[in-house]
Length: 206
Image (cartoon, rainbow, N blue to C red):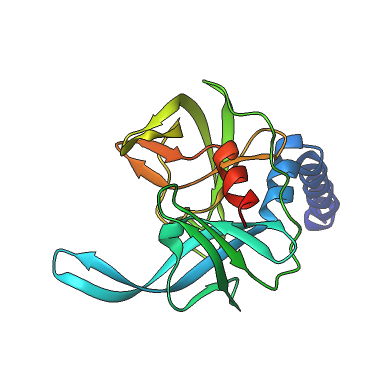
């Protein structure tokens, strides 16, 4: 008898939890952005303490237009795939660590923001951390919009906390789900990526 009483109660609570999630603007934004994210995988030569070895790797990318995927240049391998689909590399910019790919995917493109980020702005990064098959969502805060730590001529976005391996190339978005940059490097608890203006300039040339 008690079990018969609990069943409708459990169903009611489950329904309330679902309604709460669906009415959560942040959760809806993450779902919308995640629908445009792809898992990059492939093979490449990696330099290790034991010398150069041939290994598999995982990164992240995002659909930015019909059959066009953006990722980090250091995520380019041979062969490489996006969600298991073959990839054609259209353009690479080694200085800014950007790569444009041709992928026959039907995922929707992300919207890019026109305005640059500002200091202390809250952002969200999404990517296949640790090479997992499911994307991880990471909240970050802008610490600095200035020069990259490895190249004083390259403007960059410094955020805290740092990103996780496997998230490279993944989108960094604002609270409205508009892309403001991509994941590129992490060191000493902070993360780095180039701003949307540099990404737009790269794409205009291709």
